[in-house]
Length: 251
Image (cartoon, rainbow, N blue to C red; front, side, top):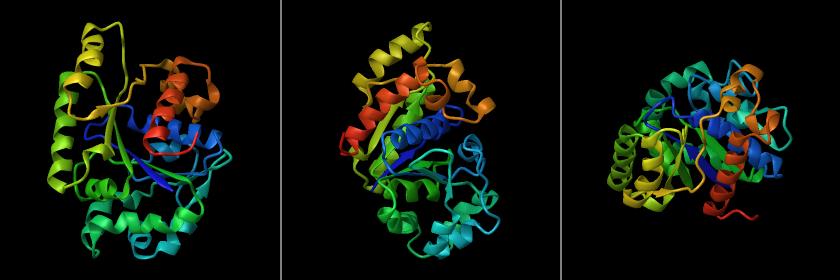
């Protein structure tokens, strides 16, 4: 089982949409996929029309790994399940801080799922806290959406330094361009220049600004489902192929 985390310090960069679409794309290829919605806002759960059970509180999930299995819900798509966000996930930081070996707790929580799934996709909250540290240690690959602007470059470098301070391998960190508008000169320049000067590896498949991706919230479906031939969906497919290779998964 491989663990892929979609993470960004910044909000509003297309992180959740990427998590949802990549999870659906993987499942469409027959990869047994679990989407873990750790963001208390629950946007990924909303897209899949799934609500958490009342008893699926963060404290119970961290204390009892058997409860994790009971908290997982099926989606409308074959090979794709979800552990939906619960309102108590707003307390995830405090809950982790209260348990032993907090930084490795998420990895331990996911370990029993190896029998059921080939891939876990984590939609992470946009915070650089103990929760993020636990995610970084659980993930085989941390995928970071980067809007091609100067501020995004700074936050990416901040994340790289965080990996270095934690002693995590830089190879576990990878970025991709998100919300790209090639009509803008700054975006075109950043697409060309940033991967050359960044100390973080970049995927070659950018995700464009897309009205179809923006419509995901209306139909509550992945764009790879309702508009599979759109520019946004095809870009997700190309990104998935890169991610799959980076994770060492078979074609």
